[in-house]
Length: 315
Image 1 (cartoon, one colour):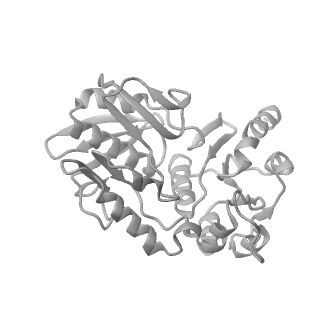
Image 2: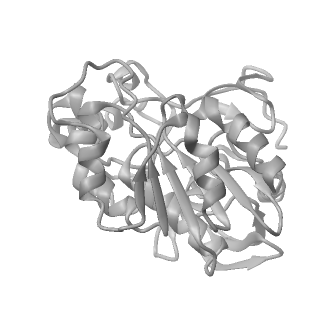
């Protein structure tokens, strides 16, 4: 929208472009960097944003403090005249952004009109009014804000940025609507960390405050399930009904005693059940939930079209 030629390497499939590689010029290169194996430390960006420093990938880092150190190391790799954008509250210095706070860039006056967010953005120099954004959830608002902040600092006009945010369709498997009608809502999300599950829950409750919500979750990695079992249990217990799948091992061998049945025992909500992938659709159909969520980073994503077909047919 701003007429800037760019190449982008994204961590997910853009719903606008149907790809994770965008080649529209070479003036700017956008990279969604990953802290998993410290690969982001190979970069020396002009601009960078850090959205979260939540403990994760402890199979690689060992301790949360080591992960935090890697983010500090990353922040020190920004070029001398570059800029670091930091979510307000993180222990790093930079241009701050946040929601309804005193950040350098802050979203204010949030409301929902016709099912979409409308809000204002306070910047260090101006106020941008009545921005529209289609994706649910405060986490999505936060990400939209830092994208806008980086573009403003680069020199893009606010009018074009507002137009771009209004047209943004999101990323595949990130609060991705599969069915959206009066009788049933089916949403798929890549969430595989307790904080991400919390974000999905909060977005769902904000959009559908009075509806019964059923969550289907496939844990990803034995080590992550072990390290965050109590947090997973607390996050999942928020939903009205929980269907839990077996742990997706990915790159790992089983860990003795770490099973989905063990995780299930920690979930305080009594409306919970361990199920097989082949039984997901039938279990959902036996529920009277109005909103259905599938979550996980394993092969549950490969089941989504089948579930969608079965629910559409039954519905």
